[in-house]
Image (tube, rainbow, N blue to C red):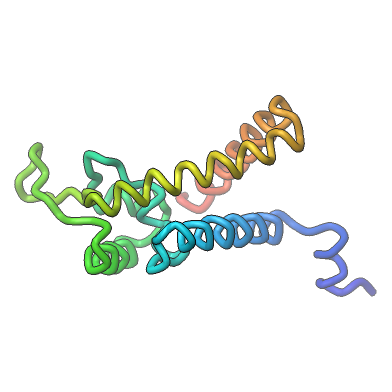
Length: 153
């Protein structure tokens, strides 16, 4: 009988592959960010930082985009505000709402993270070929969106 460990070593399922990719990307991204002066961040902050825009984003939208619960996103925003990466500002389109906006430090982190991710993707595109990498991303995006749709039902 084949053990789960053996099966995952030879024919990993979608969850195992997605987890391996996520953890490996996070390790490279956050260790490189730390080397560039952003060592106070950790992977859980990515649920907010990955979707932050220079003009600001509502917390409810950050929760929707990341797939995280609003309470979790609120806690992450509080942490990032304490660390100096974001600030809450009134939303000009609705004074009752707040926008989560990057500070200067947050903008610097966003720029560094974008460069790190671009280099990571280019490395894989060169290894696989740009056309194959683009196809992989299209297919992976399709599978991801389909899976997210199933869990929203």
